[in-house]
Length: 379
Image (tube, rainbow, N blue to C red; front, side, top):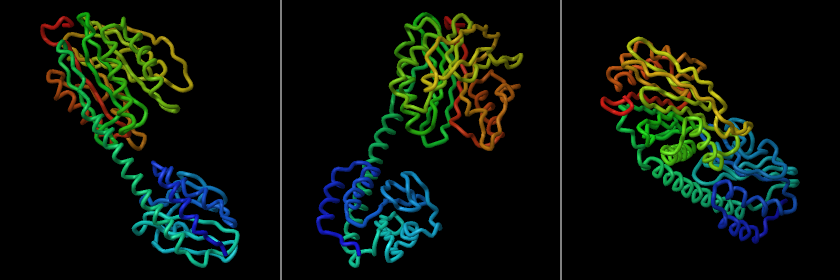
């Protein structure tokens, strides 16, 4: 049978004290256990709903082999049974498997795969598992504290200053918590015109929101100096490259509105719509490739110009407006068809209602309606 030396607890506690994240805590207990003669493998799992999720695993542990692997609680494995029942599960006499639950019932378990018989006395292993449970709780609390701090930082950030030269209504409906990765801006260009920007950070929730803050900060910083929308997209590309990780990207459309003329450039983003009493049309801008796309390379995006019709409104939106769960979607012009733009707030509500009739949103939903304010230089 496996013999557990008293030094095991000391070694494990030392490693746990130095671990910060839950993943690091789970990894900390594996080397001392694997160093014991007769231990083939071990894993730490935590419960998530009806699943046991592998935090870390090493060696030969049968069905729990990789970090992030999800095991159904009804899988009948020793580790899932330990999590499901809250009882120690021992299987076999050599080779054997031992799964020891930790924390309150159903929180998780430590799994050992052994060449020989299980330990006769499990008390030391249970003490180790108790320390592991406490360390996981500490790490979870610390991770939540950092997440709360980041969320407060994101939500208390100064709101974008809208250009008084434009009448603006903006609406954002994140799908994952109180914040999301969509950005809507209307800021002065310093030369009598206005910048309208819509951007969509890949992903949702807090991570996307933090990248979105970088988009906003960059636009506000370069707005007085950019010669045109294409140049602004190039500036965004340079600013975001150190911020956006592999596998992610940002789409954006930039509009400069001056003297009722729009100049537009897009980086993989839906085109602006022009709404007026005579109907709705899309600006014919080539989307171009998204910003900081891992497989792409920075380039100059094409610019096009269009006139703002009399009584017209510019509508920018993210693709969450038309992308709905279940694969349902539609042309954004269909959503804007027949919308009265006399009252921008009522117009925004009408477009959002038309989108909601398609089904639940699959991504963050944002739209911005803007037109020159009466008596402004852009009018």
